[in-house]
Length: 439
Ligand code: SF4
Image (cartoon, rainbow, N blue to C red; front, side):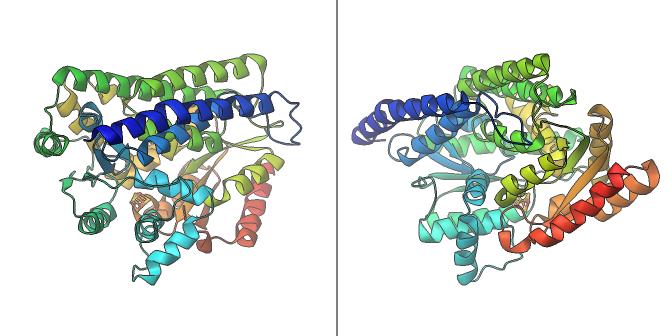
C-alpha cells in the first residue's frame, strides 16, 4: 500500500467526496420536503437521500481504493466477513450490474460481451460485468482492479466460470468456496467441508492483504453483519401492515447496504433509521401506494431496467408488492449467524441461502410469505438468464393455483437485459391477471 494512494484516498473520499455527497444529500432532502403530488405512489422514504449517499460513497471508495487498501471482487452470497475484517474494499459485480441495469447501460455492456463471443444465454449480470471489464465503461466512474476474487457457488455454478474469466483477465488469485446443494438442512459434514474451505480462504486472503486476521475484529464484523440482517428482516416485517409502508420495489433498492456493506457499522445505523421511518409511516397510516387494493408476493430477481415502469403501473392499479423471496432471502438466515463462532456459523449460514436449496423449499417460502403478509397472489418472474432462480417455477405456479387456490402469474423477462422484455406482452398479461384478482 502506498502513502500517495492513501493521501489521495483521504482527500478524495474523506474530505472532498464526503462534503459533496453531504451537500447532495441535503439537496435531495430539501426536495423531499416539497408537496408530494404523484397520483398513485405514496411519498418516497425519508431515508432515500441517505441511502443514495451511502451507495455513492461506496463506489467513490472503490474508485480510490487501489494502492490504499486491498480490493476483492466477491459474489453476492459469499461469506465476506473475514475479508471485511482484513480491511478489504469489497466490490460486488452483481450489484454493479444492477446499477448498470437501472441506469440503462447494461444493454450496451451485454452487447460488448456478446461481440467478444459470450453467449446471450449467459447470465446478464455476467455479461454486464464482462462488458464493463472489456470497455472500462461504468456509470459509477471507475471500478477498482481486484487483488483477490472470492467466488461462492451457493447461488449458482455460472459464477464459477464467470470468476475464472475475471481471474484470467486480471491475473489475480481466485478463491473458490464450493457449497454442496441442500435438499434439507445442511448435514454436519457439509458444514465442516465449507468451514475448512473458509479457513483456507482466510490464509489466502491474509497473504494478499499482508496481515493476519484479528479474531476479535472478525467477531465484531460478524456481529455487525448479524445486526444489519436482523434489522433488515424487521424492516421487511413492517410490510405486513395495511397499507404497506414500502413495497418490494423500495426493498429492492433498500437492499443495497445489506448486500455490499454488511459488516460495516454504518449499514446497521442506516437500517435502524429505516426502521424508525417505516414505523412512523405505519403509525400515521402513510402507505407506499395512495390506494392499496391488492397485495402480491414477487418471486425472483427484480427487473432492474423496468423498475419505474412496473412500480408506476402497479401503483395505478392499486397493486402493492408486499414481499419477495429475493429480499426475504437476505434476512431469513439471521438466526444462524453466531459472532462467537464466525467461520463455522458462516459456513452454516451461507450454505442455507435460498438458491442452494431445492425448489420445494422455495415454494414453502412463497406460501409462508403469502400467509404472513396476507397477500392475494403471486408474480413469478421467469428470468431468462437466471436459470437457478427460475427453474421449477412452472411447477410452483401449478401447485399454487391447483393445490392452495392462489392466483399466480408467470412473467417472462430478464433481470438485466432489456432485450428480453416486451412491454406490450407484460402489460397484456398483467391486465388479464389483475382482472382475475379483482373479480
Ligand atoms: S445466474 Fe442468477 S444466481 Fe447466478 S449470478 Fe446470475 S443472477 Fe445471480
